[in-house]
Image (cartoon, rainbow, N blue to C red):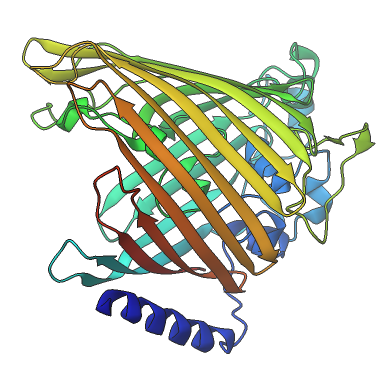
Length: 437
C-alpha cells in the first residue's frame, strides 16, 4: 500500500509541475529540418501516426513529392546538378544535411515492484541516447542510435531508397517507385506491424519478447541484428519486408565475430491495408489524393492485416544447436480515436536447452489505445504465452498505461502490470518521464 500511495503522490506532483513548465524550443532532428512539431509524425512520441509511418517507410522523406517545399534547412549539395547529365563520366552529385542531425532523448524512471526489497527504486537516468537520422541526397537515408549511459551502439543502418526505379535511376529504372528499398547495418528486424521502438506501452508485448533457453539461445524479436533487409510497397497498399541476419552472439565468441555459428537467420513480412492512408502515403481511401493533416492526424479509419515469420539457429552449447521458428499474424483496426492492435504467434524450438527438445509455444496479445485529448492517451492490453506443459508454466499479464504530453517533446506516463489469479506474478508499476531535444 505504501508503494501505491507513493506512486499517486509522485504522479500528481509531477503532473502539476510539468503543466506549468515554459514552452521548450528544443526539438529533435526531423522537427528542426522541417520546422514542425513532433506531433506531425507522432501521436505523442514515440508512437507514430499514419503520416509518421509513411515518412519512415519512405526513407525519412515526405511522400508524394511534397518534401522539397517543406524543408526549412536546405541540404549542402556535393556537386552540381549538371553532373547528373555527364554521368558516368562524373561522380553523381549527392548532398548532406546543412547541420549535424543529432538529437537526444532521456528517460527518468521510478520502478515499483512489491516482490523486491526495497520495493521502490529510482533510476535517473534509465536511458540517455544520442540518435541521428536523415537523408544523404537522392536515394539514401541513414539512422543511428547510441546509448550514452551504457556505451552501447543500438541501431545503425544505411538505407538505399527506390532501388532501380526511374525516380532515382532515370532511364535505368526498371521497377515501380517505392517497390524496392534496401537496409544494411544493425537492424530491428522488419517483421512487426508496429516496431517495438515505436510502441505505446513501456512493457513490450510478450509474444515478441518471450525467450526460451538462456544466453545465446534466448532469442526474441527485440534483439537487434546485423544484416540486410529488402522492403517496399506495391500498389500503394501491399507492404513487404524480407531479410537475412547474423543471429545472436554469446560470450566466448571471437573478437570481431557477432555470431557463434555459420547459419544465418531469415525473416519475412507481408501486409495489406484497407482504408485510411496508404503505406506509401500517396492516397487515401476512395482514391483521394493524400494531404498533410493539421488536426486529428491520428485518425485513419483503416484495417491492416499482416503475416510474418522468423527462422533461425542459435548455439545452446558445444555440439548442440537450436533450430527455431516463429510464425504469426497480426491485425490493426483504426477507428476515430481508437486504435486496436493484436497478434497471434506460434513458436517451435528444436533444442532450446541441453535437456529440452521439440518445444512448441503459442502466444497472443491485444492492446487498445485511445486518444482522450491530443495531449492525453490511455492504453490497455492483455497478453498470454502458452508452453508445452512439461517445459514451463504458462504466463500472462494485464497492462494499463496513462500518458500525458505537457509539451510536444516531454512525456509523462504511469504504467501498471498485474497478473490474473491463475498465473503467478507480482504487480509491477513504473513512472516514466521522457524528454527529447
